[in-house]
Amino acid sequence: MSNLKDQVVFVTGAGGGIGKIIAIEFAKLGASVAIADLNEELLKTAVKDIESYGGQALGLVANVIDLESMRAALQKVVSTFGRLDVAVNNAGVVGIGSIEEIEPADWDKIMSVNSKGVFVSTKAELEIMKPQGSGAIINSASIAGKMGMAHLSHYVASKFAVIGFTNSIAKEVATTGITVNAICP
Image 1 (cartoon, rainbow, N blue to C red):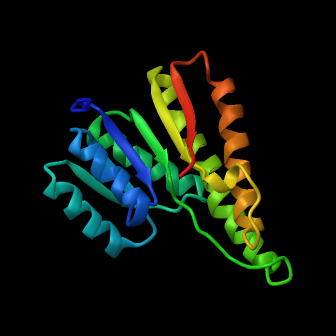
Image 2 (cartoon, rainbow, N blue to C red):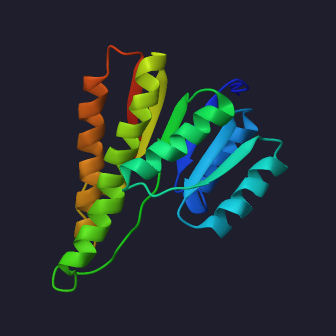
């Protein structure tokens, strides 16, 4: 088991679900963890849960599709912990429906949170990591980003986009000391 005692980790969509579990696991390894979500009540509970494992936690209400919101949240991370070592861009939404059932607004929402949210978050994170000359960004894609699935076309498209974006940004920052990867739960 790694010791992440001096590491600072930021996780989006961490008010619950996979994001909360990711944040708890980083805290168990000794990292200071900042979590972001739109739901303030979920954030409060998640912070308490992280702290119950002995971790240091900071909850931040932030919107992954708003660059200024993400910049403000990340500045709070840096002012609180002094740096940013790992960012996990996990915020996402899912939608189910056939092509006949999916409305353009449904498509826009899924693509905005799942794809644009990863772009905006990564952009803001790199503004901190590049001057540091180090960092790791982990984008949550999905197994759905590797194959088509009936009744999930908008979700699948958003996760394919995350994988393509991640591959491109990894190449773009390859010489900066920053790694960019995607996970596909």
